[in-house]
Image (spheres, rainbow, N blue to C red):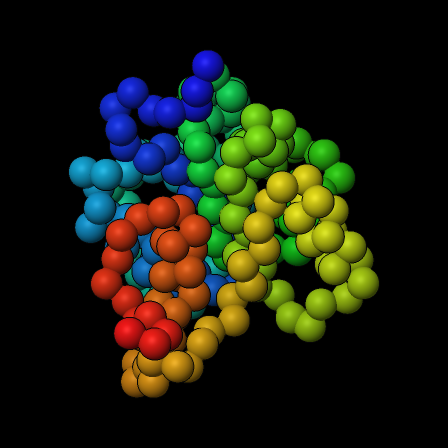
Length: 190
């Protein structure tokens, strides 16, 4: 039996936590919306994510994709049978990372991450907090061993970005690359 999606759309869960870095989630949503014919996205926000979003971006949260309540265990991606192949947590707070690393499924984000890991599918954690302490590093190590990929919100400057959006996109494009989506972006040596 394969995990391939019969509709051929990539099924992606996007979890947005209350860590600083809402612009990363905003830019990722904008990029995914441009590819809405190729992706099916379900969104879940942590309790603090809307407040951080409003504080950092000065606009209310909105998306064309369905948004599920953090306590909605009837969301399709709360079960492996829904066959969501990818999950991105952006930004990923260290509290969320720690709960997932220790198997604590106390909300839809941690439940979905648990499902993704048990099904051996792709979990991308865009960790945002800094500096890292040993507990953070051990939690990242544990999740990496379990199959997750850590994508710290560390921009690159090879492309000589000139706006905050271009700086943010250097990280967002790494996520999109990991998801296997086509995009126009700076490539080293091209």
